Length: 426
Image (cartoon, rainbow, N blue to C red; front, side, top):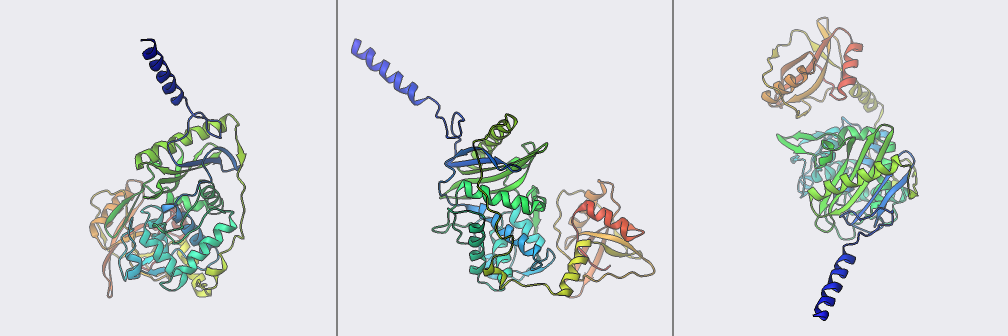
């Protein structure tokens, strides 16, 4: 009897020892249910939590942060413009996994591809953009530029094999390296959050939902990127801003999409709590890099001549000319998202005696989508018209126009508020 009691006692003692919470290297009782994690204050670089931060894990679609990084760098160097047209190759559309749904032979502007990468996590869009910058179907120079940029940023334990994060032998990263990349990305290109904060995106009649569930459920979250491949599990890089504090958090290897969201939420809670207490455990060792497009890509990427630069100035203004005698199409029903395919490529502006200024906010091949978008804008108090236009060889398009305005200055004020649009001549 005593022997049995002793066995029961020892068993209970072992169970209690096994249930004792572990204490992570960061001093927080209990590790997160993920392979690796790290978080910091972006302003100071102070790390407040880390867990297996140097364990090499497949990056999955977190790779796309670097692909967009190089795209923004190319725009900065005038080697790429948001309104440049990219011809989609059959090879680009063969990319598996998550897709933007681009089609062979389709022409898509760079801005739309970048949205497709950030929101739809389009593997096809990554290949199309890389091919465009390389000037051929061979994306090896782009991948070489990715690895060169990674080295510049101090990502010593990271190797990239492709521009989209699809499974590839030897393609690895760490939570710490992803934190370095994301911090540099947010500091250099804060405008990227315009794309990453979008919850949905429509292209070719397919509505894509951003996999970052915290965008609509956690206070202050406005980006960045999720990812998944079987070898890594579910990954996440997220940024959130509260008051004057912006934090960046990385979670690698959660067990499911739901667990990824829950673990990231827990990490953000810990991070903001530690910041409020003024606590940190280390400072991220960061490298600024050259600030230039790596040579492997710079030597082959297109450089815009004066005419293209002038066109970009016009494209950035996004103010279109509206002829008063154009008949509008009545709006019908509201919609939350627009399939903003450009109906024309002309960047020339001219004014007629009867003309007035307006903004082409978007254009559609579907009349129904156009009128829904117009109704959505009208709910914001904007003057909107839908104008039917027939282009030679391209069929009929429906343009959503905001205006008219008596002068260009008033039109540009509204354009800046909208933050997007395209230039054309009506």
